[in-house]
Image 1 (cartoon, helix red, strand yellow):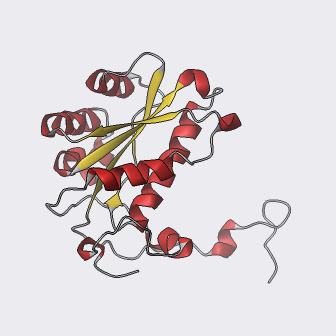
Image 2 (cartoon, helix red, strand yellow; image 1 turned 90 degrees about the vertical axis):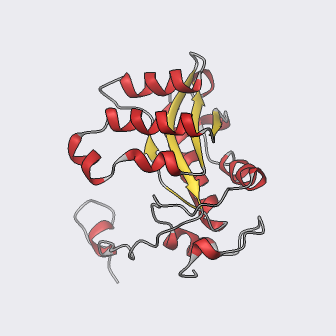
Length: 202
């Protein structure tokens, strides 16, 4: 992948192999002062809707957020419900500076009890589609397992119906940063042969 993704001219068509996209994707929290065209956002969401879903019910839907006031409020909500140590390391204020944020939501009646799994799969596919088009983004949760406050506040902000659950918020923009290469654990530590604890041979 090129070192300067933010300088890419985006044609709307992927320029990389799937392997390159998977290896290059990083969480991006700084964005160039450059608008993300609506057409490009639609292309990315079109690919995101191809994500696997329980019983192929396709329960995911997307709220595209560009309003500065809404983005500022979303950042405030995320910080308010974030644990202190994580908020200090990864404050959510960058959301207010993102050109666009996509809220990944799920229609509960179509999710077959797999609301979060369906939404997470769609968000992951969204991030990969964005990466393939020279955009950067990050995955942020829109719920907390033991505190309904975050989900409730996001639901109110986006005026979500009762049967629509927010799962993730994904900011997108042309990168203004290039994180250091990710240091991965050795594959041999992660893969087990037949039973846990047995190393894969070869």
